[in-house]
Image (cartoon, rainbow, N blue to C red; front, side, top):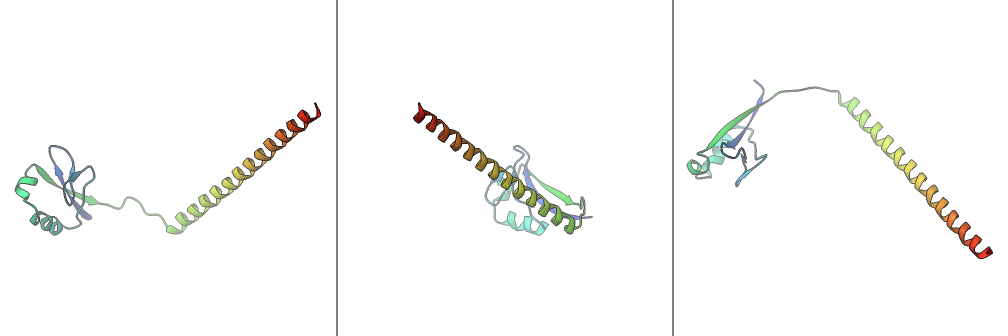
Length: 112
């Protein structure tokens, strides 16, 4: 059996208990004893009468060496930075071209 976490779900709304109410995601507890401690702080027979204790079992889905993940992350960062520099150069050239065309029009207007 893997690690378990616990949540309290309202049967009527499907929402999960939080420290002070209900929400879509709610709170989770890592130990059943923590759930019991939470219940001790509330009028639980009223607040939780239409609720269920939901137990989730956490299982390892995959395992990857961190070295490869770090390399991939750095390569993505390097590519984004290179793309950003290309975009800046492109914008700078377009802006220079726009100013050149504007200056050319102004000179032509002066020559008329």
